[in-house]
Image 1: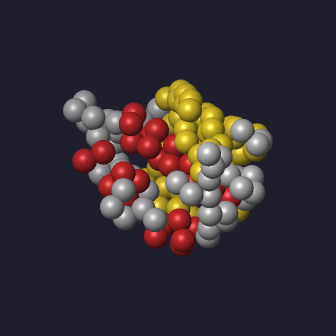
Image 2 (image 1 turned 180 degrees about the vertical axis):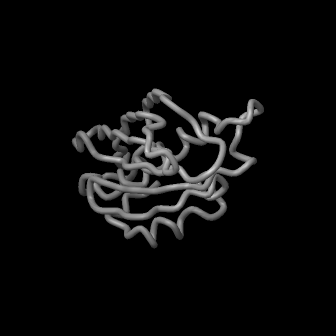
Image 3 (image 1 turned 90 degrees about the vertical axis):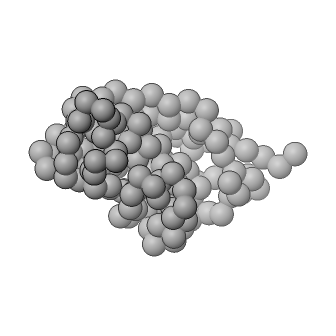
Length: 141
């Protein structure tokens, strides 16, 4: 992914069709440097066989939100980034409704960025997951 700097929520949404985030139904709601909000609507295709929201759906929402927001904080001259580590603590789930995420930058350095994301069940207002990832900043060879 090439470093492209800051993109608006609408510009980020335009990148999603035909990708995994598009298949998940992720919608970017707001974006400012260092922070991004997004949501998705829970539907049957996103559930695990046990009838609850699949953890991969929650991780996909959080990782996508952190990754898209990473672009705006890349240092000048960087060629892109890639996720090198992620962790997720799941505290709850959903079977229907909408879930939202708030992704916030914790560290934006020359070689790495660290992001935290909180995923919330909009229907209950409860935190569903706490997520943290580290992005490696890529440089031209």
